[in-house]
Length: 111
Length: 115
Image (cartoon, rainbow over all chains, first blue to last red; front, side, top):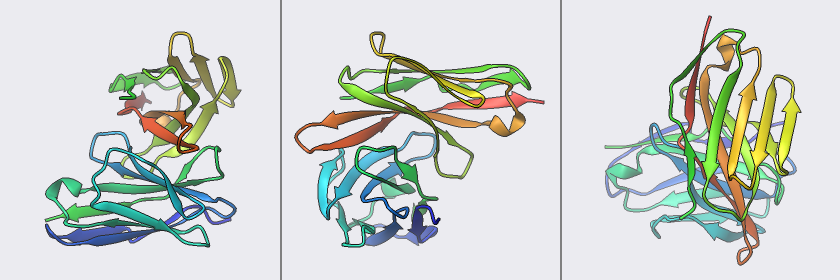
């Protein structure tokens, strides 16, 4: 039973570029949430997708956008990258209102 | 602004001792409470969740919840060196408008179990 899978594992970009991160939820899960974790901090909620709609959003600018596909997989897009966007990006999946399980994350470095 | 507070540590305990990790939260409407373990360079792993006041035990782990005091704790009995990690407390509250939950995390407590 595959867990939550994320790609790529690592990514290096420069300021101003755009990036797309991908997530496949655990089998049977229908809800995907994205988090940003800076070094030494707890994860911060970006947004949550259910039934292909953004249901909840944290305190992140519009440069952060996402999508959920009919197979429940999801993408996180970040435009106009800033140095401060360097972080571990985590995807978590769940059944609605059930505990969330995390993937291994994508480590994004901005130069 | 919903807040979750944890002592950042490090918390050092000898092997075989009980490790006690604490967490307080600001939103009285919070409904679900989670403990995640995160090894250095890895992603968070769910180890316990609790919804009701009182204690919940799973193997060497016990989660304790006191909603009146807005306090949740995690006890690890017979601590092992492999328990050395950062423990993240997460609180989930219902946003009735969005019909969904949002997890708010503390910064985590670093636990070191000394052999």
